[in-house]
Image 1 (cartoon, rainbow, N blue to C red):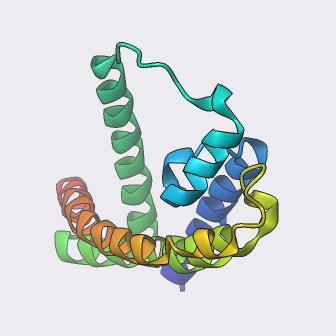
Image 2: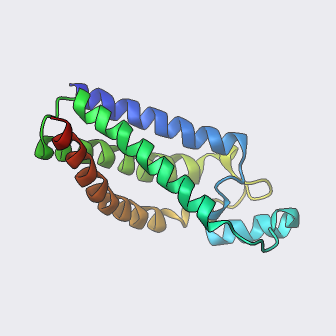
Length: 165
């Protein structure tokens, strides 16, 4: 029952974070929109076209490592609370949570809300229904990539729990 509640809470928090961030700043996830939508938006709003800048790879990698560590700590705590006491149970519980949130992202957020709700569309592209829905295949493919990534994360979380217990 705890695992089920954690899955629901994970979906709510993830969904709130994604939809909330899009409502606050529609261009935050510009790279996630279908190519035709991006092109039309940038044609209408050339001020969003970024000039090439020297990237700070060290800063980006550091930020990703910090977020990854925090995410692993959070998932480790969740599976421990759900009763995981060894590698196998931690791996299984983590993969269940990961999978539920991953496929919630694909089907509810990407294919459901973000492809169909006009409030979250980029300004000037609200009429592009077909183009927004054209990203469905990409979303499903990314869901399978996320499922693979979930195996790696679940292995790490399993090792963390096995080391704690």
